[in-house]
Image 1 (tube, rainbow, N blue to C red):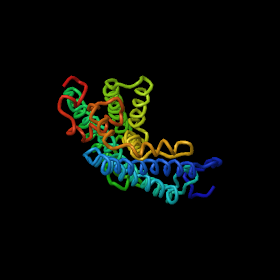
Image 2 (image 1 turned 180 degrees about the vertical axis):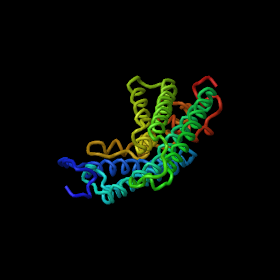
Image 3 (image 1 turned 135 degrees about the vertical axis):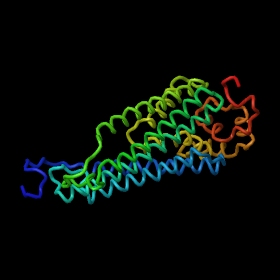
Image 4 (image 1 turned 120 degrees about the vertical axis):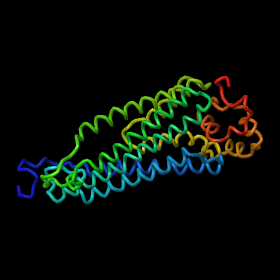
Length: 307
């Protein structure tokens, strides 16, 4: 093995994970992008309501897209998906820089996606003061540790070059393991709360138990601290059925039924909408009402919490 290798050890055999990781990264950002476009269409064209949760989710998507772009660049130029023993020292330096850049961009992506979910929960639970306090507290916690983690990643070492240049023997670095452990604990706490909040919402809805479980699982997936794209997808899923209601899918054998639906007067849809409360028997309509249609209903019909 040449002296430019990191260590004189036997090179592990292939397979490398470049192709698989690139596919996963592309699928994640592709799904989140498509569903985000659908959500924006529903909120701006069908519901005609655009709120802060939508803005935060778009910002989260921008940061997530930047993260995936850096990672995909790393697969081409920085040795991502290759055994570390196959990297030369110059490539390892580029690798460390790329990992640091991706981490710095990813932290706000995850934070903004979670804050967007909290804003949605706030709209659904705007009459329950206890949950309002919980949402504000969790939002403050997420914002605080995200800013602290970003600064810790940037200024982890002095001089800064020591973050990616292993040849620098002078200077010092903070205890990164402690920072990562504290971040993991705070992330876990926020994830648990983000799962508990929709359970409180869903249990008030008039729907079959199996549907309640499905809705909770849908929001629960978005609360996993694995990938920011998961949370973006989760924040867009409640609007898929709203989209399909206005644009039903046509397939052989059901054209006549679809034509009948198209001939149905809009007044019927308006009457059905007026019969629903702020937290209706379908989660997508609950999201509809909570994100701006509350003004169409009298105050006594806005929710099912007795207010």
